[in-house]
Length: 431
Image (cartoon, rainbow, N blue to C red):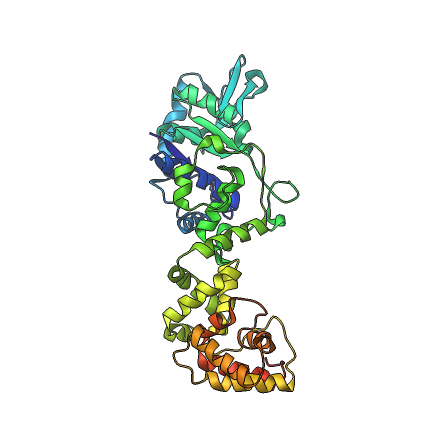
């Protein structure tokens, strides 16, 4: 059975590189019906924090990367001590100046059989003995990670290629412990747009910051998967499709460039595909966070009307934050207008007449709205283009969007009529 692990160090924020490593291990475990182990590598007691551990767990839960087994390395010091003492007794380790050192063979080669890179050969006489236990009695990362992988029966180690040069040390330790060496796969680093290693200076945020900006977890998963993995020309995948299709031999060797614009495009694709009622629940905090719509306003609003608006507006939104701002138009609040348009007196008179007619339209559906508007236009010998743009900007605040009558319907007759009248009377300068 496949057993993989994600083993983060809780010493900082949970970034997209860590998220991709977790995702690839999780996808492979789920594809193979194997086991996904979450192991917190908190042996660096000075830098490890409970806050970082909580952020790791919250990030994985948000992404839906559930784990089957959970460990913290600091709970396993007895296991590490027993393994170190065994190496010392067998002469495979020695003590020097209070620290315990692993004795690296001086002859031969250590070969890393990498699933992606092929065989990477290291001459043993180029490697140096290394510490496995500090003089204060605490154990070094390179030692405990191997002891834990061996003890937990990890079959595949899937991690970033910044760990490649650690692999020969780890292989020598596996062999010294008399345990099977897992299969290794070292993924290419995630790069910024300048092809340097991705960092905060490229605008990369923590996973939870992306959540708070209004990205969907399935979009983040899709985006991270496509950074270093491909399946034909397909770009957009559901999580279920990724689980079904994910294999190690389709991981790319070249470094993956992180493009914020591509992430936003990906999120928009998943917004278009998501269930409107689910989006309604997800967008609520973003609507309220704008400061205009209150929790009470949201609570008393007609849910079916809101869900219909979500369905109309999501095609023009890249994030839930964008969608939340657009949803403000459905409430009796001052709306933000992206643009203005002059409303001459004749046009204003026409808009006011339409506003008066719409007040009594019932039911307030796209069809009945259009019928009422066209009756007024016919009576005034006018055309829809004479009032369409001013009506759209006056009522929704947007120059473009869904069909005019379609978007007016969920806003409702009172708000539509009131905004049209106010915008017309102000000559197009209504705030």
